[in-house]
Length: 139
Image (tube, rainbow, N blue to C red; front, side, top):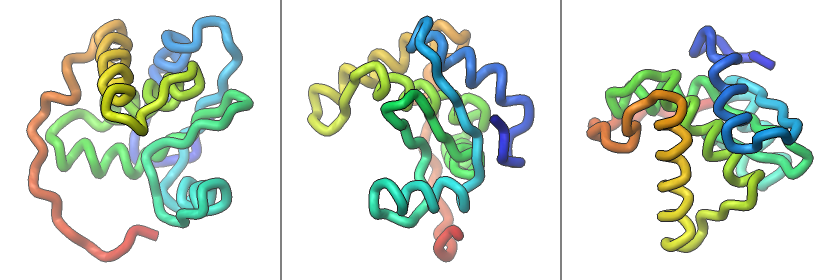
């Protein structure tokens, strides 16, 4: 489902990314804008601000195209690559990966790199981070 305008042509690659992680498991990938993901973030996690990705145990991954575009521009990578990172991250959470502890984060990061490589992407983590411009709150 594509309900965002920031990154066009993202549905098929995002679906493929989720399928690489979750294999034959049914999954829905919803591409939304910052406003929509902020509402979901507030409703389910008590934080009404935009976030990159939310995963739900029933097999839904919700990602923000707006956040991916903004972060990709700040890091100097393609917005679609950033969006695919979010989908892979969300799918790995559905597959049981955790990232609260340093060791778990390292394992998850390695798994993300493997899936992104299988998608034919380079190391999206190696892109230098640019200094971000501060603007008002995103609504």
